[in-house]
Amino acid sequence: MKKVLVIGGGISGLSTAWLLNKRAGEAGISLDLCLLEQEQQPGGKIKSVREDGFLCEWGPNGFLDSKPQTLELCATLGITDRLHRSNDNARKRYIFTGGELHRLPENGPSFLKSRLLSWPGKLRLLGEPFAANPPGSDESLAAFGRRRLGAEALQKLIAPMASGIFAGDPETMSLVSCFPRIAELEREYGGLFVAMLALAKKKKQERKEGKISSSAAGPGGTLTSFKEGIQFLTDTLAAQLGEQVRTGVAVASVTRSGDGWEVRTTGGETLQADLVISAAPAFAAAGMLEGVDTALVDTLRQILYSTLNVVCCGFKTEGLGHPLDGFGYLVPKEEGRTVLGTLWDSSMFEERAPDGMALLRSMAGGACRPELMELPESELLQRVRDDLQAAMGISQPPCFSRIIRHQQAIPQYTIGHGKRLEAIEGRLSSLPGLLLTGNAFKGVGLNDCVAASQATVERAMAYLERV
Image 1: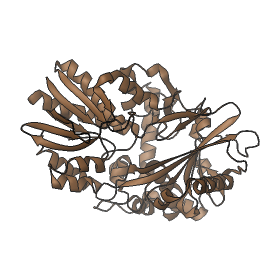
Image 2: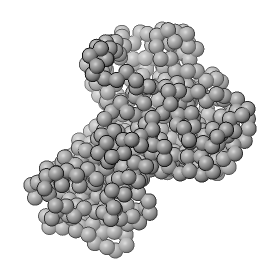
Image 3: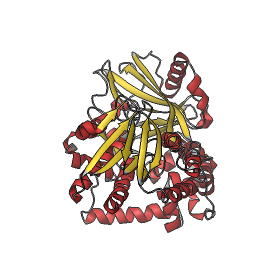
């Protein structure tokens, strides 16, 4: 029987453990698997809490159905019938700039009519096919935006998108690491407009042939969750793993022990394993591995994390001042507001707020505003209220509020991230029986985490079949 320890009980650790159980069973390999989670409740940053009738997501609020990974996991778990897709209104997204909300254009005519960009900004964006070729080096997202789309499009479109996904600084974010598909399209087609036309033609042909559905809404698919909140996914994984999950157990160190590994907990317990899989954040993994490989630890510590404040506010819909007819809005840094963006959660999903109420979830902080983490909660809430009034005219006080503060929220794929990943892979190749997974490496979304878990399980199986 092979002993396996998985460290970290977020979506990455839980899905890795569950999928490894499944694959090992199919291959006839007997496992003694244990997942260690330092908190009392598994799930990591995923937490769905209902208070006073409002369902607050402390972390991510779902995944996009345009990629198969999480959908496949849900199908294998037997919970596909519990999936809850966002309303059609969620395809409407807004940018707050110049003192008002502007809907993101969805086609050519709406782009030309929109006042989101000035006419010089529109003309510069339309010149994208004639932009300079990409440099040979790792390019920042900001440099890419200025080169291909212009400074105004960077400020009002690209940078807010980056803050909405990574809470990051586009001047330091690596394009190829954060948005590999965009970099790939530029390489393959020579420009984004040419790529969009080619892909639209391909998609139209596939629809004619009945290969894909035409019902997906919004950029990249439909936001999907569960009526109980996205925590239902991690709860299901933990429940099916059962006694293999141990909560309230923090790992102090991981060291070599003969041909295997020894894991010591902060409670003084010593555990032996043939295979150790760390699904902990990069900084936490570095702390555990200090006695194993200095170069690996140093590289892991170069992966930085942004802070993030999540501010949930509940309001009466009567006299609110805005119809909340969409996904929400993002705010360019140049507007000088506290909020990075606000999601209209109760408009996206039913049963997120009591009847006659609306739930808004605002993000503040990120890589560009880490000092907001130090604000007293009362001041942070007031600043968010001021921003909501400026953007949507909401003057009434919230009847419900909850602030969640994440000191190390989202890993930042800064320039050089690809080289760091190569260095990490190089060090791990000399440490058989040790694997790393999670959102610190190749994607921060739920689909990315599950995809990384799937890849990790394949590597784990290859190792277990050899030893």
